[in-house]
Image 1: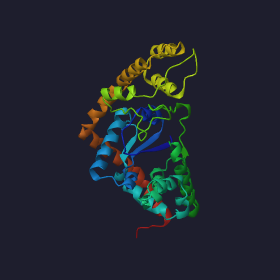
Image 2: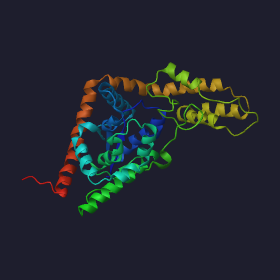
Image 3: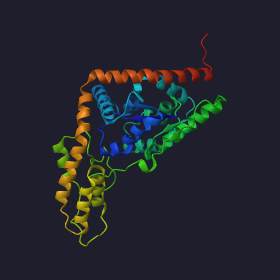
Length: 329
């Protein structure tokens, strides 16, 4: 059984794009792998969150992932800051990470460009902390998005460098967990691109029905088809793509026929899509709220995850210290 690790940043709410993209695959992944899912609260410190906001966001994201189906009986679900071994491995890996290679990472250069007033050391060594997250459990596989591929390559580099310096074959060289065709790209409501937190084009799993209706009714459309069976432009194709995720086959066929015959009324289509999204998200939203309000359950999940992660991380740090040469007299 392979060890798979994935981090979850405690920022924003989960939306349909998250659910049909990564989360559904996480749920499948935990059936056949030794999975570690952690809430990356150390990583969020690069943006200087206020203490109350940090704690609230951790609680929120933990509730949402549990409501979607992550199972603490099948996986290790923990909070990054509950595992001090991560910080120690981060320190040890930093000793063999060089400023030039860190400054050349794409994400760091982008941060320098976008937020020149806050270029902190945590941003510079972000790739090292991510490597520590992965290597603390000696993971074989890591699900990564396009924007994190370079960080995984850096992790491979640090793992190989450690093995070469100390003449061991200790760290696995982690590979990307490829979901392939199972990774669904969910379009946003603004007519272009994918659904995302920062784009303002998302339906959140926690959204109330009335808010969902307002968002969907504002979705971008066009003036309608001018000839039968003409190709659907991107904004309209996006609406049909969303409908394929939440609506019945009959509903999709009905509006497809109306489009192809130039009789479609986008208002009717959006009203139907909104109701289908509400039917889909309501059970998840109710589970999120129930879990969020159950502090005893959340505390139990966090404590159980901490203990399991501590056992794994403690073993790694003990062995890494011995390899480096730290000995107890």
